[in-house]
Image (cartoon, rainbow, N blue to C red; front, top):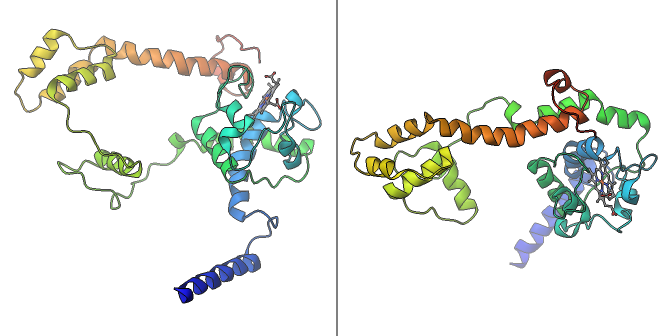
Length: 287
Ligand code: HEC
């Protein structure tokens, strides 16, 4: 045991030494991975969504500047906004999660994407590594917030990524026809230490399907019809009939009207991009 322990220690020291000698010239106290994470996931968001109101030289709302490390760690009128290692206790995280009504950031704008909020939580958990030694110059701010920078960030959005064939080999087998979708779900369930529920009976199935597609319960006639339909493709037929129903269109149009249109309306007022041309009739959000 003693031997194993000391050899592990020796290799760790060797690895540390090697990375010191060969690693990129980053600040002594930050790993290259931490800097990369900050530069790719955190800095662009701070620059585009926060600097405007939270700057050392310029608007410093709530007494808070977020444009370099020391200012960020000092915090604002309420004190510290970051507790390194503890996202839940960090005011900045609570503000971007919109946890309380009186502090929702970025102020008067759409909430940040969930994936961005997750990145910020991860960053704080890592100890909020921040390589920014000094406030940015006007030129740096311009470079971080101009249209090419915004465009570059938006191009990272998942739906713009080229389609690639995922590797199925590592996924668990689930039985039946082992459909890849079921296997992906099984992998996520395993990760969360959950086991799948049993198969739903026919009555539960039609009820779930009806709510999922039309937002309404099935009628008694529909339930009876489905229960007595013994054709092998009875379920496919049921899905088709729900998809063909005007209720299906209404249900999904409502989501679209609620979220997408509202978001576009916000953006029209806040961003100087092509949406202004695409949606000239939308009211200005005034932000
Ligand atoms: C349009 C201006 C604006 C933008 C953009 C903005 N904020 Fe704020 N922020 C404010 C104002 C104003 C306050 C003061 C509290 C209030 O009035 O809500 C504030 C306060 C805060 C506070 C509390 C400071 C304290 O000590 O009380 C935090 C944390 C914060 N903002 C984080 C952010 C983050 C993170 C972003 C970017 C994702 C951001 N803000 C973007 C205007 C803005």
